[in-house]
Image 1 (cartoon, rainbow, N blue to C red):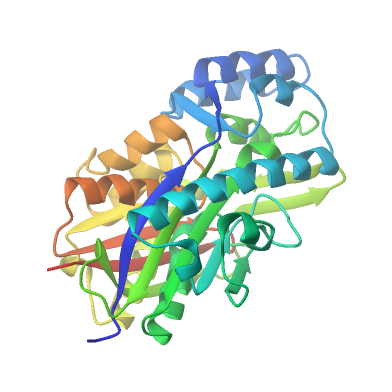
Image 2: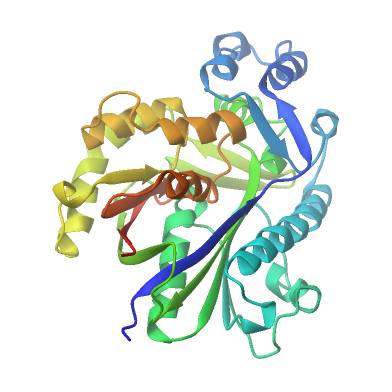
Amino acid sequence: MDNNVQLLSLATAVPEHIIQQSDAAETAARLFADRFQDFRHLAGVFTNAGIQTRHAARPLSWFTEPHGWEDRMSAYVDTARRMFAEAATKALADADLAPDAVDCIVTVSSTGLATPSLDAQLARQMGFRPDIERVPVFGLGCAAGVSGLAVAARLARNRPGAVVLFVAIELCTLAFRLDELTRANIIATALFADGAAACVLKSGVDDGLIEIEATGEHLFPDTLGIMGWKVDDGGFGVVLAQSLPPFVEAELGGALDSILDRNGLSRNDIGRFICHPGGTRVVAALETVLGLPTGTLDVEREVLAEYGNMSSPTVLFVLQRALRQGLPERSAMLAMGPGFSASCMTLRRVA
């Protein structure tokens, strides 16, 4: 039996509060229109974002009041714990495994801080063993759904027979700011949402959903200002460059070809791309770069419409639907994030 890594299960979770995009637009207008001169020029983003509903850690009314670090991180830990437990429990049940079978947990999140880490806080509740290996990862942003899964896959490959649990959890809405009268903040309030996904990985098996084949990343030089956080007393403040879609069109293709080439592959070997839908303009840019007819990334647009941009878990929501539809012989997951960086993973259909 070889040590090829397979994905045994994939589960998702979202917080209970649902925000209709029309309500978000109305609330944003009430909060910003009289204080931010450019708001009227940006208001169209709420209707052009391709989003109908989003899930949030707190009800919409919570965001109409000022909050600082303590409020935001308290909300993060409270909601992240519940989503972690829900997604991980579902994933383990779908893999027909008990929590004490898990040997390692990789957790990615860039939208809140918790020390001890979430996995430690939930260890007794979940029933994890005392000797479990924990790998919490911060700062990879939207790309972490792919790059974090790649870390989990490498750990599984290097420890044949070990069960690795991967959890991606983000509470992007907690970075919405009343005091940030900026273009980036308005766009964030129109795009970002909260969610979680969990996967169970194991090597040396032949009955998984899909095999994780190759992984790779590309860090673009001198691009630190494209995406990320600034940090002040009020919490996280979004950094988001207006030039992202044109940058994707100009630069992503070469980076993707380089990643695939390092693994002995080319785009012609890929039957389907599974992409992180950062927004409608980014999805359109991805179709251009990948040479796909407009509308090909339909599942990406569906997830964006129903859930918004949840950062790292979003591409796993797309993968979940793509698995249900059935994947070709080889697929490729693709996400981009702070750095600015691109992360790619190829998947092989299990015979």
